[in-house]
Image (tube, rainbow over all chains, first blue to last red; front, side, top):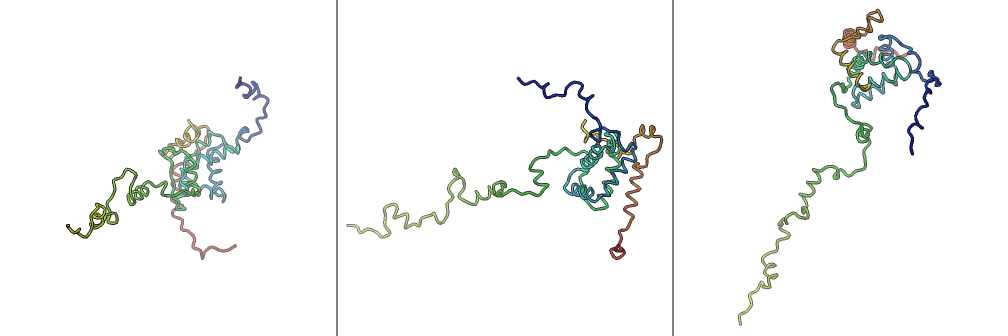
Length: 185
Length: 59
């Protein structure tokens, strides 16, 4: 029988672990509000960071998510604490807004927006990946047009056309008559 | 509350003009990055005219 206690931590294990292994276990490098904002603002001077942030804005990711990501990076690197990250999120958001406006980048503010779940389809759309799918299969309107232009469905009524209509002579032949009048004996 | 929700809530309150009053009391110094400061920064950046390409010197 499976015992969940076997995969859990051993009681008292936390007292034996070296808490200096991770940056966020150590005291933060930046302890002030202004220092935290300045750190993130300076990170935007980094070419790679700026490119990523601008690309995410252009992709339509909400600005609030981008700010959360930047803050999470700072916390992960042990630069500042979670509490300070939350407090400093406002000025960082405003700074990104200003940068986006100066670069004429349209962005989603992310405020009061319903959360859109990330699915494989949305990721494909963001990355520009297109599947090899026949568009008629996915487009219901084209499928309807294709049916209406053709002979119709299995249960659709037969549509009279000129090609299908027999001439008067053919009809007479089919009925056993002939085009020439038989001689009366 | 998730971290992202807390960030969003903090942003909303900052945009409304709220500041971390208790933190300012503890620190003892007024903070620099207030909503007014950011508004001024935006105005300053908007007023800055972009340099013409001819004026940029190659280093």
